[in-house]
Image 1 (cartoon, one colour):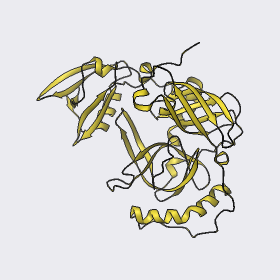
Image 2 (cartoon, one colour; image 1 turned 90 degrees about the vertical axis):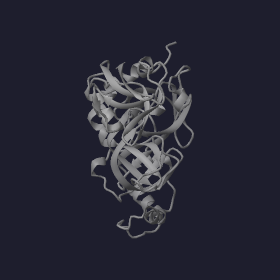
Image 3 (cartoon, rainbow, N blue to C red; image 1 turned 45 degrees about the horizontal axis):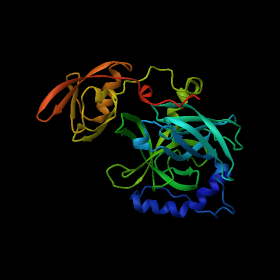
Image 4 (cartoon, rainbow, N blue to C red; image 1 turned 45 degrees about the vertical axis):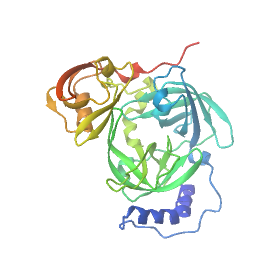
Length: 337
């Protein structure tokens, strides 16, 4: 994609500064070329603005807010738009907007808990060329990339590829981390030099490289979507049985899983878990951290399985039985009028 390559050249001086900030002297910086003669619009890079209003009684409103904005990436000519899933969780209305101000109503196709990705579809064809998928597994450290959000384009380097453990019962075996940090990351497209989609923006992070304190952004790799995309479109989610979900927000400290919040009316709250409890084991076996906790929880059975957590309450370890559910069952549905 010549337009993307011209942007890469234009932003190269900014990227050179990342080498110093990150301290990675092994970066091989390509020779500079003349900057592009014109600016690109986000339409040319296959993204739209996504504006979402949640259902009136959305359970996620406390943490995500009743109204959300981010980026959607157009992935086919029929109006399918890929984004980060938390933007469309419990959505009531969705509006897509192009750079020239045209607006299109859209509906949620689905939200995949395992990947964290969401898919919506415009109710009318979008006047935007779809992006081509890249191969995120082939992306390398030090690769130059573009982060494309609805309100601009930011250059970056891939600085790390490693697991990501989320406090909301979420785990990626390998996420893509970029630097420098950008503020325009929710649902943003991560594009390769060739203009192909490598990932979808999820979070701003304070440690993109790993134990270095360098801020950056985390992206969900596009390869995680490919095996489930057909089912996602047809059924709103992967056809694999849903994972058990407990409704726990946690923090790992020295290998211990500290409960920081329990979801209101969720399984953990019903079982009597409270903020401040420490989960030290599952089924009588000690845990080594959040990733171990999630992995063993999901291996214990499908959603609906009852698990026994070994919980430190005060100075006593108590067994606490929790009846799991599928996460989507806890979410509010769009009202039917």
